[in-house]
Length: 114
Length: 105
Image (cartoon, rainbow over all chains, first blue to last red; front, side, top):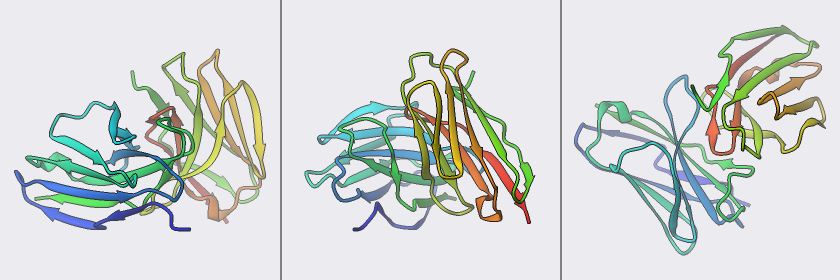
């Protein structure tokens, strides 16, 4: 049983560029949440997708957007990259129909913005 | 005020001792509370969940919740060097910054 998979593992971009990160949830899970984790900090909630809609959103600007597909996989898009966007981006899935119960995390995408 | 607050540590305990990790939260309406373990360079892994006041035990781990005091704790009995990691308290969708635990052999 595959867990949560994320791609790519690492990514290097320059300021102003756009990036797309991808996530496939654990089998049987219908909800995907995205988090940003800066070095030495806890994960910060970006948004959550359930039934192909953004259900909740944290304090992140509109440059951060996402999508969920019918097979429950999800994408995180970040436009106009800033140096401060450099972080580990974590995808977490759950089977809670939009809640935050028992999140299963992927191994993350390390984004570096130069 | 942060939504979830933890002492960043590091907390250092000898092997075999009890490690006590604490967390406070600001939203009185919170209903779900979790502890995640994160090894260096890895992603968080759920180790405990608790929803009602009192204690919940699972193996060497005990989670304690006091909603009146807005306080959650995690006790690790018989600490092992393999328990050395950052422990993240989560309340609903919000995470604390984590407490680093070192267990000395």
